[in-house]
Image (cartoon, rainbow, N blue to C red; front, side):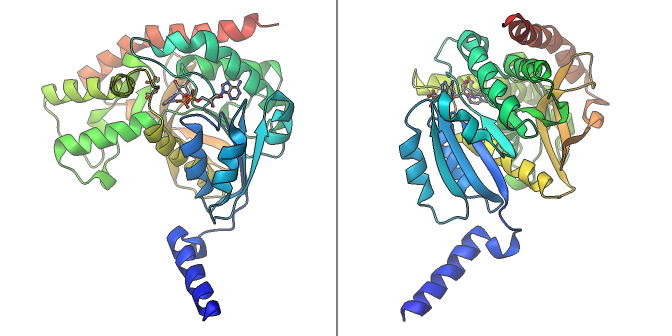
Length: 342
Ligand code: NAD
Ligand code: LMR
């Protein structure tokens, strides 16, 4: 009887997580800032991935309990905890994907740029350790202001002689997740089908949803375009205000980042049909970094997708020109910060 229960449980587990249909778990993922509001649910979601063999959780405090807790889920990956700078190198050795949600979140009344003074140094130091210990990894930056922290990371990697622009990503998936949700609600579309590319950057007007490129194609009145664009641009602030001082988006962010990690792992695993929006080094505009759809492959970004920026509506074209000065200033601020460091 016991054997029959065990066999039934095995079968149910494998069906729940689809193991029988999935390739062998073999990728190592590290989350830096894993004890935080994003880090904890993100770590849990990554633990659900059948592609992950090792999950390394790093924070400056409180990560032991998070790792012990998550490690009891009966999914393939081995979970290890790492606390403080002295354990960071061991956390990173041999890792394929590093996700960085370390840093402070906004409170009501703040912009993402108000986080720069604290988070810029955190990202610089973590990326420096990534450069020393796993320079070939995909690096995915969540810490705000993304418009500056990604250029900081690029500069640090350049200084260390290991910058591969195909493997550095600002995580803007939450903007796409939000755009898909709001558009599906507004137009009564089946949520699972909706895909709205979001380009530019990740702050205020630099977040530019291209509603005219919505798939399946949908038509919007001028009022709908204005209302949806503003809602998507202000969605982070909507959450910050609802949380009233207790932080910013964590759960939807963890969901979005887990999607981006899973897409990256599928690409690493040889899936030739993986596309995501991300804030990356780019030549699609005159700005050095720009969020757009990218095709992911085993070596990182295989191609930027220029077609989304062709045939824009007047509204989108004006919004694109309007976002450039702010985005450029944030990029320049990040690069200047990283260049003036000893
Ligand atoms: P949080 O304060 O809940 O967690 C941050 C974690 O980072 C904490 O556990 C803290 O101990 C850790 N940390 C701080 N310094 C560290 C260091 N040097 N090394 C390792 N860990 C360190 O914050 P949160 O809500 O998880 O948000 C984290 C960041 O993500 C914020 O900057 C926030 O603005 C940003 N964010 C970005 C997006 C996006 O779309 N890209 C969405 C939501 C939040
Ligand atoms: C978001 O878009 O939710 C994040 O960038 C967090 C924030 O400060 O709004």
